[in-house]
Image 1 (cartoon, rainbow, N blue to C red):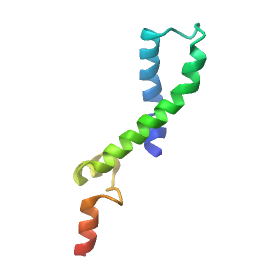
Image 2 (cartoon, rainbow, N blue to C red):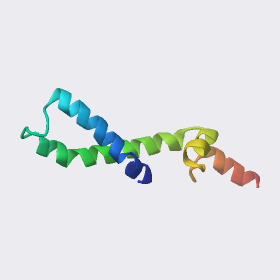
Image 3 (cartoon, helix red, strand yellow):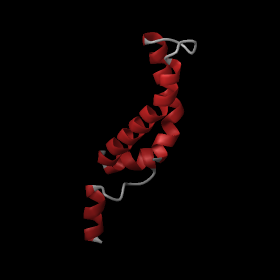
Length: 82
């Protein structure tokens, strides 16, 4: 959920650019639809990114997240060896 919070502005900004090119701008009636759907899309993208990070190798997780996800296969193996 924290990644969704951090990426909200980036995802909404990209979605707005695409929406402006494909659908319309803030003066169209479709802006209300964008305004209501953008947070849900950002939440979904953030959750997907978090899932992909959880499945990534442990060293990459340490670099991008600062820790390894508790359910990571390598962290379970390391716990057994301790």
